[in-house]
Image: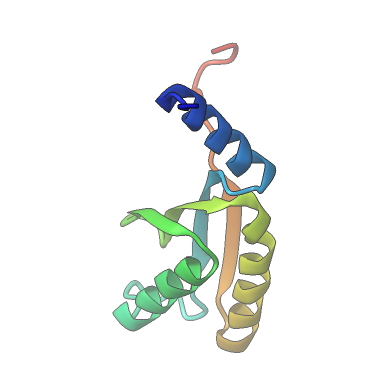
Length: 109
């Protein structure tokens, strides 16, 4: 018996949904304690490595605010938040993670 590509895709997608592998988009922003404009590149690289450790992928790095857009499984987000809280307590940074969503300037759109 041969399985069509469509059937395989549907079965694989259901498997990913059941196992929580489907990624959601999140926005991670942070403030440094001293209010410095320049954040060390090494710190940014360390954050990206931590995100990758938790199965996330940085899809955009912001320039006007300090932060990233991340694609990550929702099942891993609480572990990342916990790790960032530890880093924040140790180095004085405050982090905020929220699920990305559409924003409209006019109501009912």
